[in-house]
Every structure is written in structure tokens, then in C-alpha cells.
Length: 262
Image (cartoon, rainbow, N blue to C red; front, side):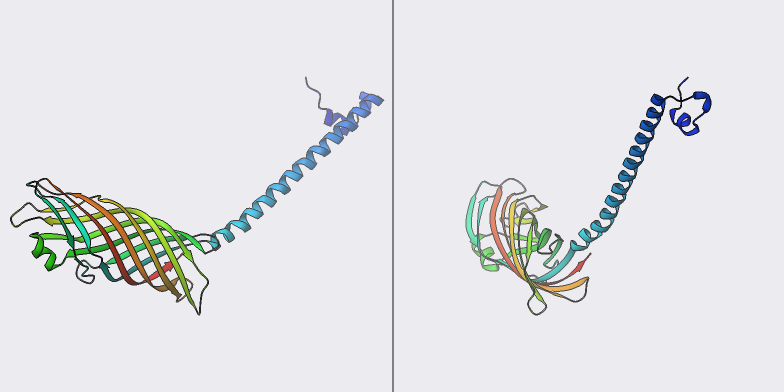
């Protein structure tokens, strides 16, 4: 049966007639108990200090970072570009196309952006979608014999990138951004009268974006902004009935929008 040394040392029974060695053993045991209690107390203090530090620091870390959602519209334009490929009969085409944006015709030009600003509120990462449009102008249609050549349900550009804010100037804060991603246009093409019609969304190729703008705060959560937003996309698409079409499109837009921060 195990002996409870703590109990024996505390009671100091006469019947045990403790020797000097026993006294020394009891003193050693009491010292060990004190050290254990001190270690436990130290661990408790350390744990409470760590918990307090986490409680204090985490809210301040999140308070310094913010997430911002933005929506915008405006006037979008596209530079002339080369169109090449072949139709369902195998005939080759290669011509320069001029584009119309028709930004305010349905469906209109618009964009959505989610930005997470880091702790310093200067650098951020952004996920951005832009619904752009291009229509071949009447002269291009007449000169090429195409019956339809447009991406009107969207030359849809989705990018992820970085944002950079600068110091405010009279309550207006400038910013710039850049990103890379993909082009997912709604392809609407008929290469000749009576030919097959391509009318479908396609994953067409890589895309890139650059933008610059100025933001003005209305409150702690709301702001308005104006910006110039440009995209470049490579679009290689498949035509219904056989054939293909390739276009590299550069767009630029002057937009205005609003943002909400969390």
C-alpha cells in the first residue's frame, strides 16, 4: 500500500518517530510542493497574459484592415483591332475592325470590385469583374460581309490583382491598380448572310487590367470615386459549324461608382 508522504509530514504522528532522515525527506517534499505550486502559478499568469494580449491585439489588427465592395458604370470604348480566322466553309478572313461600345444600351457597361486592404490601408488585393461590350461598326460590317460581329452580352473580364492607395489631397485619395485574369465573352458571330450563328459564352483567353482613380469619403463606410479602367484581352473562339476567330481587344472606360467598407 503506497505511503502518503504529504499526509505523514503534515500530521507529524509521534507513532512514526520521525528520524533526522525522515525530517529531511519531509522538508524536501515540502520544497518540491512549493516549486510545483510556483510553476502552476507562473503558467496561469502566462496563459492569462497571452489571452489578454490576443484579446487586445486581434481587434486592433482587424480594425486596421478593411474590405471594400465597389460598383461602377460609365462610358467604355475600344480601340480598333485585327480580326482573323476562317469560317465554316474554310474561307480565310483577316481585317481591321472598328468597335462601338454603346455603354448605356442594354445590357449596359458596369463593373464590380471586392478589395481587401491590408493593415496599413495602403496596399490591397482585388477581385474585379467588368461587363464590357464591343460591336463592329457599320463600315466594318459592310466591308467584310459579316452579318453579326459583336460581344454584347459581355466581353466579360475577370481579374485578380493589387491596389495601391496614396496620401489624400484635400479629402480626395488617389489610387492605382493592376491585375491579370481571363476573358469570358458572349460570342455573337455570323460570318455571312444565311451562315451559321455562334451565340454562346466561351472561355476565350488571358486578360490584363490597369486602372487609376480618385476616391472621396462620404462617411466611415461609404465613398464615391471616379476612375479610368483599361483592359486588354486575347480572345480565341470557336465558331458554330466549324471555323474560328481571333481578336485582341483593348478597351478603356471612364467610370463613376460607389463603395461600401466593412
